[in-house]
Image 1 (cartoon, rainbow, N blue to C red):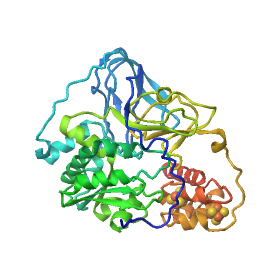
Image 2: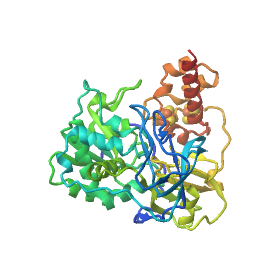
Image 3: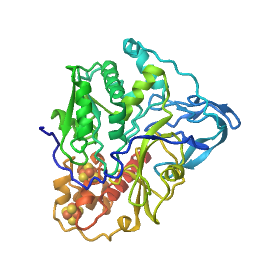
Image 4: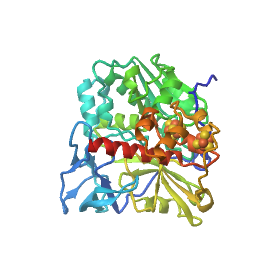
Length: 440
Ligand code: SF4
Ligand code: SF4
């Protein structure tokens, strides 16, 4: 098998053995969910229910507030008990709707539309928009917006991202094995909506069973293909995946995939698109991998949006020792969170819990000028120099060197022998620069 890849990147231990072979399990319906109004990039959703209202699963509880925004839906049936600020899955706090279960798990009815492939593009997009879908790989960009590229940027290729290059995570892998046919239908729907002539599914070589299955499912369709990829992090990042699969290079300085005729969607998003168009089912649940050295029984769980993280851990039998770090997402690009107080968001692909030894911080030393960070940067940046500018407050030069092109993949910090927290410094620089622009 000839494997494709991109330039740069690293190869951390994948640690997927704990959960890769475990079928997806349906979690029990939680007694309470907390559904955030900001689960996506863009304007927060606006509640359309009040405390005391009764809701069913799938019922609209918050509306989109602009083009780059999404609606939210009840993920359990019961009563709205609070609308206030709660801990967000990526840290911080933001407005959310708390629903307390009535124990009935009563759903709105969603009818099967067997002729879903023949719907007009406008109707398909409307159903995606109504379902409140945003990128489920973690980026959280509203899917409806991604399906509406600018008219002067024709799209010829859709790439489904089944790479899952983040260590520990196996939710996309399991979804491909268990819902492969639906994902292929989702790919065909996306191709119709954006007018693409070819569809690809990028999968790394550590998932040979998924490569085999998806290849079989695509075999009869000349427009569809599976692209097996070498193991290399961050191949799941949009620009790196596009290059690996097509050799097209998305320009830096704010370039989008549409600039090279490509739309990328995560395999989980393709599945949600299929369910939204065929059944008009809103996004009320997702697959999340709960794993790490201190989790007693790691699992791939189908959990309702808003399920408290603590309940996920309980469903995995609890912890076998004192935890050192909680991470929402994977250890490379995920968010370290202080506790299990937050709840599952639409972009929550994993909850990774590490022991104290794995989580221990090593003290930063002075830069050794070894250039290892430059060698591995998949965006062709010079992280050590950017950070040197950020450290002295010279943001103009940091930006000139590509501060805002950094995708925060962490490859540079992973290889740095001086343990410099390059990503945190870059993040600090980005935030300071954005704040300075806002003040101007
Ligand atoms: S500078 Fe940014 S894009 Fe480059 S390796 Fe570091 S985190 Fe990744
Ligand atoms: S890898 Fe670390 S020590 Fe080496 S040049 Fe980059 S920042 Fe300096």
